[in-house]
Image 1 (cartoon, one colour):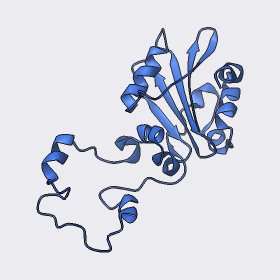
Image 2 (cartoon, one colour; image 1 turned 180 degrees about the vertical axis):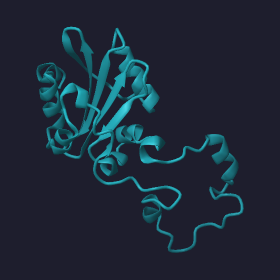
Image 3 (cartoon, one colour; image 1 turned 60 degrees about the horizontal axis):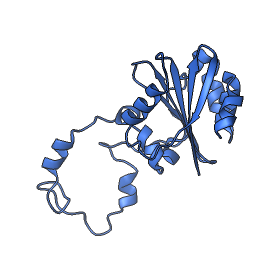
Length: 182
């Protein structure tokens, strides 16, 4: 089960809104959704969690690039919402243009000039990464200082338990508004 919410910082404190991510396909879509929640380009936090598996925080400050923290990147990679947050930049990958990929892949799904996978090829092992494509690391990934200026240190962020989003909201003074949308 997933939970997603936006916390928008205002002059009067935090405002929370339940968020439907069904139409969100990319980090850009999520960032735009967050920006729409802020009238004055104030800080907006996007909270996403999959019950007892992982949580993510995306911070959007005005027109700045979003900052991301994931509690467990490997678990998030197995989630459609988590995959939105696992950008090439966050994973340390060089993004390849889709046009380049289309030119390399033959109709049978192999790269031009590449032989088809040999018998015994383990797709699961390939998914774990190679020298060219690093595996998604288990555990935390992203910017642990994402909330430091709001009173939540990296150490605290790493120590939160299974109800991490409620603990973060409590530390921000926003637990009551978050509970209204939960």
